[in-house]
Image (tube, rainbow, N blue to C red; front, side):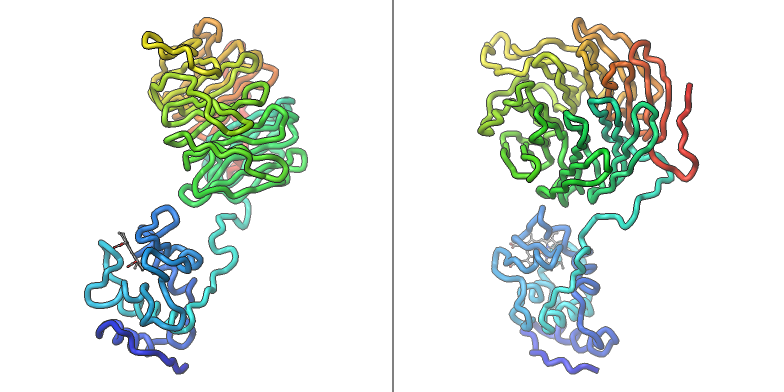
Length: 460
Ligand code: HEC
């Protein structure tokens, strides 16, 4: 048995006794492991209040690096000296201060913590401990919810969100060509570059990190993966010249980064809630961001300055699309509104009319509108959402020209093919439906996910 020199702690009886008890057990034969022995205890009893997003007392117990940072009242521990370690003091005694509002740690747990500090408080966290990376491609027993679809401007590719990955399909034949496995579990948005050679992915792990990925489409290899902030990123869009990427986030900021180095050019913090979508003006000089705070904000791309809200603030903006020819953008709202606006200053607003940029209000939808998409010539607008139907309108007069049904639940994404012939939809049921854009007929239903059973493209 190892002899452990230790000082008698300054707290009374309980901690001291438990220390002796722990020494009699087999765990005392080897040094205490931070990662194996202690992180499960912190995870269960402490990390709920002490993590990077919720720093009670400015203490982060969720990682070794976090614990190393001093809290509001100084260092959390002094390696080699449990008696001078705040951490030990807080969890010890008959009525320990921590965990607040929870069961105290057991004497054996307190003893482990104490001995770990006594032994030098060493970090033995494995290098990949906090990686959300999968060791191999996921297998699916049912289709994964489709949060996003994108088609390449050259009509060659279809990208479909999966779990931890993006499925890359050949668009003309709808056959799987690649599985783009990245670190983030949640894929939030997809966008092909103007030259169709790259795919940008905004993603993340909620409340942990956001991630921006760039893939080389032809080689199906990841070119960039940048971790940004502590929450998911949404609504990625390419500048018209393909040199920059814009996106929003759950951290309420809009960012623009440069390619290929990922340098942050703009961080815009004028929104008061999550930003779901971004869209550039055709000249690439301005960016529009649509947020749950109900605003579509116009941003000067050169200096990151706020220009104006282009819309009247009526409902959370949950989806947005730019008109391919006019400087117009349409939003889909949380209350079912679908409203088309000019992408310009709202300066001429008066008491009588504070929505001067409104071009057209479309038929109100039966629920939140998660997906809006213009046909390539701008003549049609497809709208989908919680109602499970996709409705197609004429942009010029707002008349409904088709209704695409059969979805098993909410629709989260709608795209037109670049030739304007087909409309693809994806959503809660995990199926991709292909409709004729001319008569609204369902032409194929595709399971993008390789299930245990053979993948089927069902011709109708
Ligand atoms: C329910 C929420 C909650 C839980 C669970 C919790 N804490 Fe805390 N903790 C707090 C709050 C709130 C403070 C700030 C107290 C203050 O400033 O008075 C705090 C402060 C601390 C401090 C700093 C004390 C100081 O004086 O600066 C330490 C160390 C600490 N907690 C450790 C822990 C440990 C270890 C656990 C798990 C065994 C834990 N906490 C569980 C809420 C919690």
